Length: 246
Image (tube, rainbow, N blue to C red; front, side, top):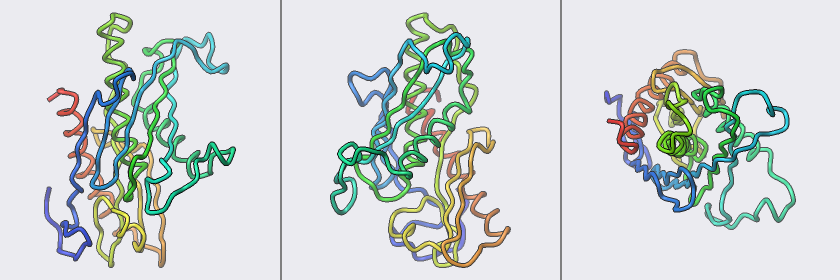
């Protein structure tokens, strides 16, 4: 990845450097697909479960469905959070993130080719240090691919119903400098931050960007986008290696 001008990041990374990333497919024994993804100190377990049924609004539609659920363990952060189940409802943040994960996966899935079945991806944050939603999307793709590969091996599906890869990463302005893959110390003080969800072929699925202080310029946004594209290209290659596709 091309180096950009130096900035003193808390982690010591270069502005265009990802955190250390590992992806472990098949981590969960019982799930049809799974991946333990570690992006620095953010660790997420993603599992895929296949059900031969559909939500009522899709019954007899001739297509399948991919959806997601997201949650954080009580001690994923520095102080204990109460379980959302104990509170009796999910937070708005949780609902927004799991919808984002579901949209991201459906965007690269041929739902007609999937057939009338549902795949649910569960993303559980074991440890959080920024970028939990982006790590969840990147790991969820591996879990989904593994589950679909299992259907092919059982001769339930003839071909892989995925038309691209999907991965995600955050970028932001830290001390005025565009940087890739924010960890919590950077995210909590960034002047702007954005989450980019892209395909391996470089197409845009979703961009979530916010100025935390002063508005940022179009030029700064383009630099964040450039960093994101390079970072996601690296993540997509890691996905392929984890799945033994390259």
